[in-house]
Amino acid sequence: MSVALIHTLNDDCLYKMLHLVVSEAPVLSKRSLQSRTSVLAVTHVCARWRNLALAAPWLWTCIRFARPINQRLLPELLSRSSGLPLRLTYYGRAKLNYDNLYESWNVTDTKLVVDIVAAEAGRLYQVALYNIDGDEWYAFWVRLKETRMPRLQSLRISTPFGGFEHELDEPILGGDNPTLRELSVHRFYLSLPNCTGLTSLILKDVQVSPTRSLLKAVRHNPNIEELHLELLCSPIPHPPEIPPPPSYFEPRAHLPSLRRLTIGGETYLMHIELLGALVFPASTNVKLLFDDCPSLSDSLRVDFGELCPSLQNIISTIETLSLTVHRSPWSCDVALRPMRSGLLEAKWDTAQPVTTVLKDAPFGHLSFTSLHHLHLISISFPLEEAQWFDILVRVPTLTTLEIDVRSSMLSSLLIVLQQTTSEGERVSPRLEKLVVLSRRLLIR
Image 1: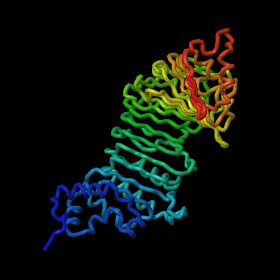
Image 2 (image 1 turned 180 degrees about the horizontal axis):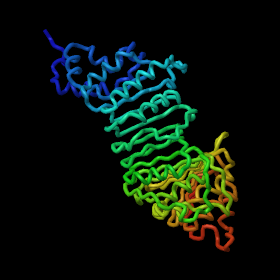
Image 3 (image 1 turned 90 degrees about the horizontal axis):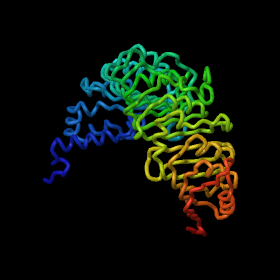
Image 4 (image 1 turned 90 degrees about the vertical axis):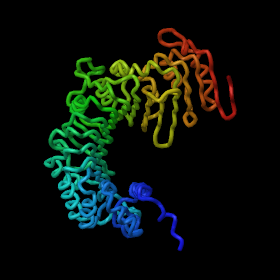
């Protein structure tokens, strides 16, 4: 009698297969249980698979589930992990189903999950709460702030909504949280927990008021390797002078291990407050996002490099740069990135007119003192003399200009190249090479 090849595999191979199945299985939910595609399916193949799965507690240490959830199933799965550290992922009631309708919900579902989290707090080293609304988070927060989680290393929270009505003035976790390494929050208004060992802090669409309380938290976590701050505009109790005095940023936050830095916001004041207070290595990858920031007048415009010497150290090494200008019926996008390194990226996304945006983007707040080669792409927006002048007058070190534009823009560019600045110097005085790329034209 022939035997299926899969039954000839040894236990080690099957364990690896089971691990892959468990890691790729759909979220545990009513739908996945009914379709028999959940993690439980590995225990229903045959007696050998079931015995192996039940004898491997590490297979049950990563539990991903969505409500509604069977009240007896979750405790049973937790018991299979035999006291090992747990990763718990919960998808809340804000998650839309496949018909784009809200799934049924009752308070018992949330209370069950909250009670289980509290009961297993000593084993949790990663907690992720996705697609939750304010009521769900408030229920979690009330228990979490009073529950010690001595192994917790990662906390992730997100909601598809624009924040919620419970604006918490107290930290999202109680105690000192010495083991916490990662904190990721998306679209909540929260106060940060007390901790000193963070290596990753990600805040997206989060309002932290005041901003200086955030900087205080950053200073207390000098080992941060990833810092992502996309903040909603919040009132600044005492807006800084423009430009702020150096004493405004003291003491600065020194982050010697920082590898990735992202700063985004709805106002240039937010970038000024955050950049001016940070010190980081020249090897840091920096991304600056400007979301419909109101333009500053020429007298108030600030050079970010002067505020943040660490940023200027990166900018001063950039010799080749790509600039893309794109206009759609709804917005204008300007993107700036080096052509030979990924250390800096800047993006402007705004509903303001392109003519206004180009006064700030890309060179209104960033001084590229070593820039020699600029590749400019603008197909959807016809650059006129004023826009060419705004761009070129701020990069006098250019020796090569490569443009991918409409052929109709060439005349305005050539006119600007013959003009002089207010100091009496010719625009782009060092320009040696002009490369024009067009669907119908190629000039060198």
